[in-house]
Amino acid sequence: MVQVTPLRRLAVTALAVCAAVIASSAAGPVSAYAARPGSAGTTAGAPATAGGRAPLAPPPVREEDRTSGDHLTVTVRHSGGRTDGTFEVYCHPDRGSHPDPGGACGAVDRNTRWGRDAFAPVPGGELCTMRYGGPATAHVTGRWAGRPVDATFDRSNGCQIERWDRFVPLLPGPRPASAASSAGMAYMAGVAGMAEAPVP
View 1: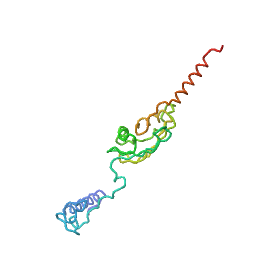
View 2 (view 1 turned 45 degrees about the vertical axis):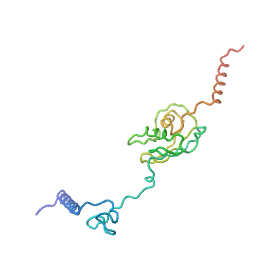
View 3 (view 1 turned 120 degrees about the horizontal axis):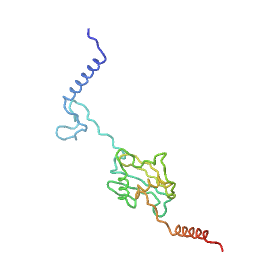
């Protein structure tokens, strides 16, 4: 009597599956999409594939697939001037309500690497300088390179400033010192000079 081992059972099952696949492929190739009614080789109401099988349907169209290219919504607050607000950016082709859609798309393109999140936050435990870049904040949402985006930016330390600056002009660049802050610096220099002056 022949002993049936698990390995022999696996081999017999694999042969049976292969035979079934070969038999089904002998009926002809299966089309993923049905041919248009009235086109060559089909008639209205007749199945488009051999063997009487129903054709496979195309996948459903998702909302994010309807728009071509990448889309980002940028909301900037507390940066001062005309740079505050919400702007739309569509890339590939570049367009939108952003003041510089071409530059904004280029900034994100420069930061995009295969397999890495272009909008990833600063890693935890990172050593950062204690510089303060101002109260500006930004929130970026949308889709980029087929991935959803939901990122926040600020200028609270050296690492955050560097991350922000990588995305200029998608995010506004640092604003130049205003006349008021220049006057304030001049006043502070004058006060410091008075402290060093000898008292008569």
